[in-house]
Image (cartoon, rainbow, N blue to C red; front, side):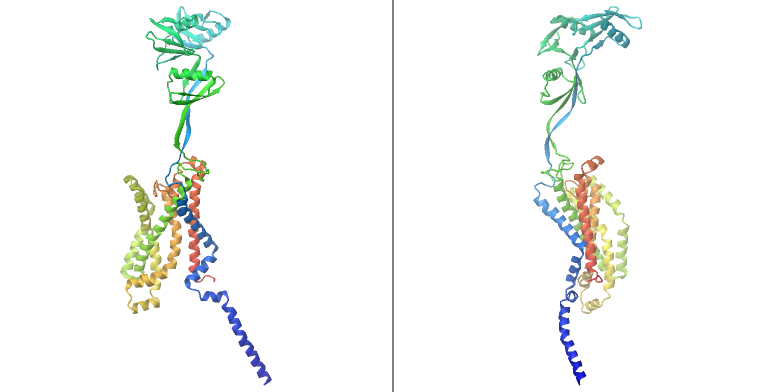
Amino acid sequence: MAKKKEVLEETTVETVETPEKEEQLALDDERRIKVLSPSMLVWKRFIRNKLAIVGSIFIIAMFVFAFIGGIVSPYGESEVFRKYTDLTKDYAGITQNTELRYSDLSATDFPSIAKAKFVMAINKGEENFKSDDGSSYTIETIGEKGEESYAIFREGTLVSIASKLIYDAVEKGYVPTLDFRYAAEKAKAAGEENFTADGETYKLAKVEDDDVIFDSKGNELIYISDFIVNPIGDSDFIPVEQKAALKEAIEKNEEKITYDGVDYKIKRENLQWLVKSGQEAYVIDTYSSPSKAHWLGTDGNGMDVLTRLMYGGRVSLLIGFIVVAIETIIGVTLGGISGYFSGWIDNIIMRIVDIFNCIPTTPLIIILGAMMDAMRVDPTLRMIYLMITLGVLSWPGTARLVRGQILSLREQEFMTATEATGISVSRRIFKHLVPNVIPQLIVICTMGLGDVIITESTLSFLGLGVKFPFASWGNIINAVSNVYVMTNYLFVWIPAGFCILITVLGFNFIGDGLRDAFDPKMKR
């Protein structure tokens, strides 16, 4: 009896402990999971996946950046910014002449060898010299020492004038004769106001410290100075009045003058001056570096890069979602019908799928893009056509997935029950079969979003996608069309590439997380 009583007490203790253990198990995580709904189970598994959470943060950030950022931004999507800048270019080179320059009758009458003998003769103070060919030359000195010019005669014929003075003609193309130079040099040296040459009378007078020769009608003909003004670049002739103005500025050590409404900058280097022409212009502010006004600078069209990125994100994300929606609707409809009915209907739909799988997508889109370029299709319509084209060409994969799932689901007992209760075929497919494929569809669609965004970006980069004035991340990168811009203006294209990277990674992480969350074999 004692043993029996002891056993009874032990049994009683065990029965008392049992509720406590059951109470402890009820609070355990595993027991709690068993009472959760399937959607809560999926959510619980999803939030346990760190990469999925990171991907969600990426996508939320991109949506906020694209849709809210565009509203907050003070600039418009296609707003062009301008700035004032100096547009200067080389206009003329000026040299103060300190060397003798020759005005020859001809190269044969006074060749280079004779010029060398002439220099030796004046250095020795001689009035005559002979060249190597035996020709005799006579030198006539004109003017006082230090300002002298020389007339060179060969056997009594004037063949050259050697002078430091520069004769600038008022009219383009006019070249004074040798006799004219000789008479003008003598008149200037003698201080005479009139001289005769080539049968005409000319007047030599001072005009604002410049020696000017007038013809018989009183028209300005020649300006005499010791400055050589040579045009540079596009300018092939500089008016003598402008030359005089430049000379006056040089003599006064001025660095800038305005002539005929154009600003000229003068930079001196020893006895030479470089004249640059240009004035302040209101130009497009292209490739401006990042600043307070433009955090990521401006692009080649003078538009704010950050604002374009925001609006480009809207376009890229919208295209991604719309294309996925189109391919999902077509794929689910045809895949559901094919999987449920089987037989000849399944055969026809699968052959259509095979045909679409054989279509060369990239060449087709290139052809369509070229056609739209030739037809000058409106950018808005072009974007719609792009979305429809991508959606129509991408549905076969979704259709095959839905068909495969429905083929296995239609043999389940719940489908037998739907047939027994007389539910219509359309309700059986879209009310009872398709919802059971939704978890796999969500995963496929989520991961497909990243692929669509990359495809759109690639097409826009190739000039086949979204066109100006609309922005997309692809055509923002497309604007960097040469190596110089790509290497020197990184702030234009790297942010767009970073946005594509973050968005695609985010969708892929979410897709991986959903795939693991929907898997019933996942560890709880």
